[in-house]
Image 1 (cartoon, rainbow, N blue to C red):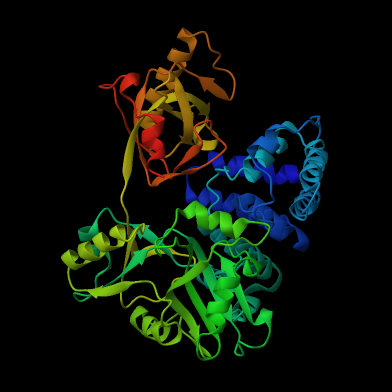
Image 2 (image 1 turned 90 degrees about the vertical axis):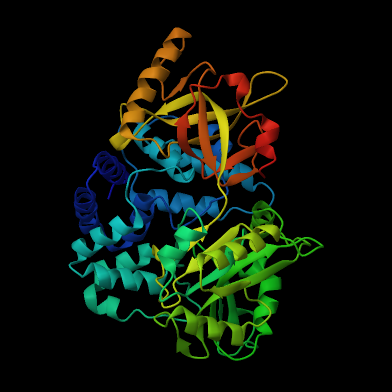
Length: 512
């Protein structure tokens, strides 16, 4: 199948607001794929190519020099092979090799295909083809129950592989999927609660809730075979995205190898700590994990759940039973936490977590099973939210349902030396009414300044202050300010404030 067909389907999915319409469009494409096209196509359509991060950033993509094809000739396999080749480049000269490979595939792409590739590789593909919608679409295309496909995806780990299995083997093949030590399972996710009281209401059962510190590290899932001394392959460490990073976390492997008993599947966080055993910023851990070569920092594992212990699958067991098994198996490596009988006790644990330098807490239903790959109400995270008053520097025209609206905002902090420094973007938190007002207002501002409005990015004079909620900031070379906002979303515009009252770049950096 042509890559252009995937791109066209993505555009149609983005233009639809109804979940069923998105499902039907995706199901139609899935049903038409050849067996070896399913895995890469699912990755493209969900914005998560099977190669994961391929070692290129925005600056590399922006620097590519290539022609634009008039007619589509690229096949799904062509793009898949090219991304695999880029991801495989390591060592001296790898940067130039990646550029050459990317220029070759971009040089065969039409303008629409190139735009899609850029969004895909930049992690900014927004089309409404979430994993949940894809599961429903695949179930329809394969003629299997969505619940069966969802559970198989949970246990099999990768959505793309499970969709391929459903399309080729049907319900019988899905029924054979079970938890297997050594094969990553999709992690259970937490929803957000505004505060301890709300989290208590959401998660407590019969006057009891489990509360654990929320660490700001790297989510890991560790698998150990029945014989921990069976060689290095006996222990595997996976990320939240199911990437194998065993060779980068020798400290974690050593810790798990020393645990008593046999086979284990544990869920937790990897965290770099300082000399006072306090956690470093999340980017410190991320840098340690993503480094091509070993680095001297120690990475500690902290586990908060057990999915398998000594030959027993625990996914369907209540949380309290899983925690008992975890404490027996991983004593000394368990995330700090407690059983709470009131919102007041949860608030006390939260204060202790923040004082220890942690991100916040997670409040959990003590009776809940491990709903892998799901973000439900059984786990509720509570963490501080910061707000910043920033200035709108530009906005990008939206895609899909937001076509015709100025959506993605470029945000700047005030530079005390003069002007404004870009620190991030966001399109989150914007209602239709606000999008309409924003489009009219920003277009008018751009025209009044003599700036064009027909390009993808519309630049405006720095005159509007906007309140932005963020979870924090992290170091980044992408923006001139040297930092990037984490999980930024719009709270409201601030017509009561002028740009000289916006937060400074120093204030923004202090959140890191």
